[in-house]
Image 1 (tube, helix red, strand yellow):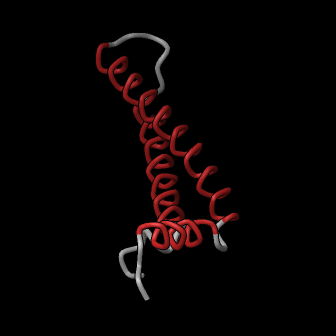
Image 2 (cartoon, helix red, strand yellow; image 1 turned 45 degrees about the vertical axis):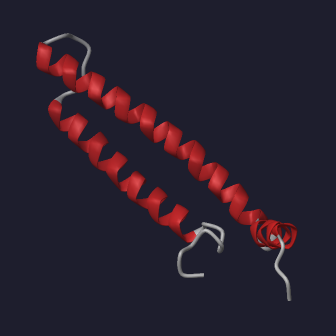
Length: 94
């Protein structure tokens, strides 16, 4: 069977959308959560700088550590979920 560029493109297109509609929804949610995690990380860095310079209205060091641990746990969960939901043709094992 002769593989042309058109047939390869059609096969990749089918592989992307076959049984991946629900994965697409979950990946969109994970992407939105990743954006939120980046914003929280920026806020934590701003709080640490304000705490180090002695500016007012900052969280205590303990509270910043708790928020950082929660953020790290959330990022780990997001990474695990996104690695499980990648389309099959992107995985190197397929």
